[in-house]
Length: 212
Image (cartoon, rainbow, N blue to C red):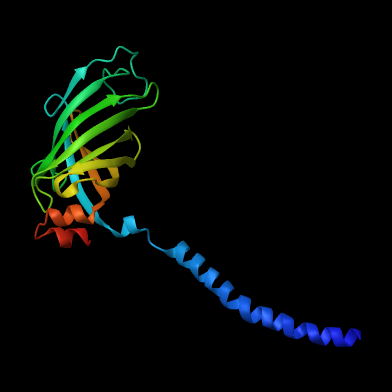
């Protein structure tokens, strides 16, 4: 009798597997598709790459408007620097590192010496572009700049025109120091914008530059 019960159990197990396996396979397929799917919001954005040089010239394009009342800063480069020093800038943006290379815009904003001990300034700037496929548009950057670090990363927090609702980051480097008053900064912008914004402000060079 025990042998007979064992024989009748096998077809039931086989029948269960025939019904359950297709359902299990479907569940696995859905899970894998969700794991590797590109978010719809990402698919609807276009990449933006900008490579610029910014010329910060103390007393000319960068003017101190607030003298910090804190103590003399211990780790900034030589100079009369105090915690809270605030500078307003209208710096030239160029295509290459030389101040005489092709102008492509202005960097307008401010930076504040915000580290009590560390050589850190907090930057808020709007890059107004005057040449290239994004001419007439702006991109807004903000973040922490440790001036002695080789590479600093700031955030792209917005924009206007063809760069409306831009987001991403900027790799910010000191390319060279022309003099004690003139620093050349290299800005490597990695950002994206909604595809609809790019299409609504079409430019003959936009598609090629966005696809790079």
